[in-house]
Length: 351
Image 1: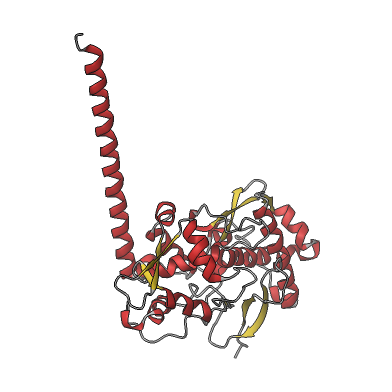
Image 2 (image 1 turned 30 degrees about the vertical axis):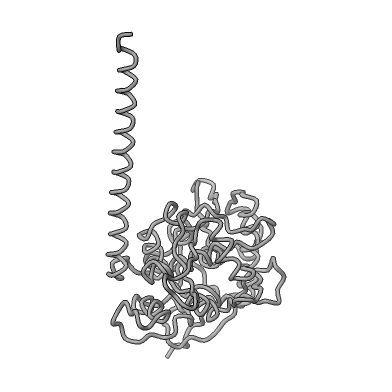
């Protein structure tokens, strides 16, 4: 019987300097027939089945179960099939990654820790390009990982892109196939770059997307204590400085509220007072529930229709948005017509 493959886990170690990137370590995975990826801090959106994604929502509030799915492993024991091998994959790897039509070389021909080091080097380079708002090319990236690892570039690029998207909320998108040039943009079209005003901090958009996803999955609002509970299970603790996110309470209740991505309000009639999180106005403008559902389904190698309750909610949201746009257009047309009529009357009325 073949030996079970190993799963890649990105470790975000507090002891590293602020500019360090997640490094990977190997762990045996006897329950999987393919290489698996997992993130040990804030990516419980990457699961092995639609049932597990439902279980994430159920875990946050068992009394508000969204499905009757059988019990799944803890949602924070995050497991996924690699995005580069899934049917859908991420746009930065499957659809636009370099040389994806060719067979990928066996990464095990090099020690795993060597490949991990090259993935880390490439992530640091991509983060620098993101901060400076510069494009990059496959040639530049090959220079970073050195000529010795050229044959392994597709694997290294795929893993680095996966980490950029899921940890930092940044997509690596190919813009010109002729010279394999790439641009780094925030996931889901959000305009928030995730970097605080000091310009040196790590991008935090990945955590923002995680929080917005939880709010969507929980029916548009989540009690504050449930958010802290799931964050602590992923290694992000209230009152403790995280080397990527800083202190999460300030980030969620102040920074992202001021940015307009979150609303933080007292639960009506609560005594003693308790608070909850909702999507803020900027989140509603820049993205949609359907976009989030498609994103969640894609990174889990699934289809939005695999989550019927959320899919119905996303469709309702789309319909409401369409009606709102129609109403706004009608309003604008009516006002323009009234203004034009008043102008005509003024011009042609006898003195």
